[in-house]
Image 1: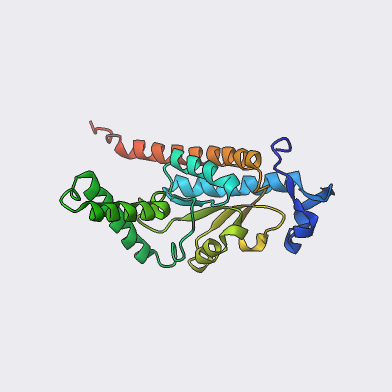
Image 2 (image 1 turned 60 degrees about the horizontal axis):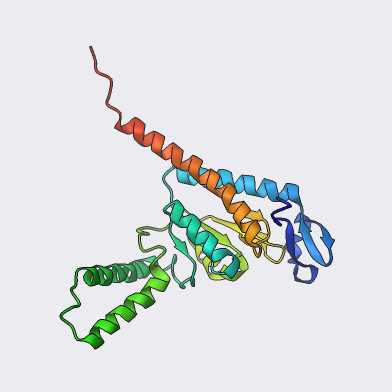
Length: 235
C-alpha cells in the first residue's frame, strides 16, 4: 500500500476540512492518509461491491482525469461493466430515459453503417453520418449496453465528478469512490481513502476491487449452475 503511494495525498493547503480525521501526518507539505483507515475503507467498499455484483447488479465506473481514465476503461472492459472516461453527460442518471434514446440512436447508426445502408447516400452525407457516429461514440461507447440504471456508481476523484455524485444521490444510487485529501468524504457512501492522482495508487486499489468483483461474479455463476442443474429424479 505505502510503496504504491496510496497514502500520499495533496498539499496541506488543499486539504478538505472533513478529511482531517483521516490524515495521520504531513511530509514535505504533503498530507499522509492513515494506512489503517485507508485499508478499512477499502475493505468496506469491497464488501459492498462484492454483494452488489453477487446479486447480478451493475456498477457504472467513471473516471475522466488523466491518471485514472485508462485504468478504469481497461478494468471495466475486463469485467464487462459500463464506464465513462471522456465527459460525464449531465442527466446520465437523472435523465436516463433521454440518454437511452440517444444510445439507441447511436447503436442504430452503427448498425446501418456496418450493413452498408449509407452507401446509397452522397459522400458528404456519408461523411456527416460518420462524424455523428464519432461524436456519439465519445460519450456512449463505454456504456451503450447500459439498459437500466446501475445499482452503484464507482468514481475516481469525486471532486472532478460532482455532477455524477449529485445525480446518484438524487436517485439514491450508492456511490463508491477513491477520494483524496482534497475531497469531501461526507458526499460518498463508500469512500476509499487513497491517492486519486497517482497511477500506481489507483492501480493498487483497482486490483483489490477486482478481487471483490471476481468473488461476486463467482457467486452469480454458481447460482446459475445450480438453477440449470436438472432436478433429481424421483424413484
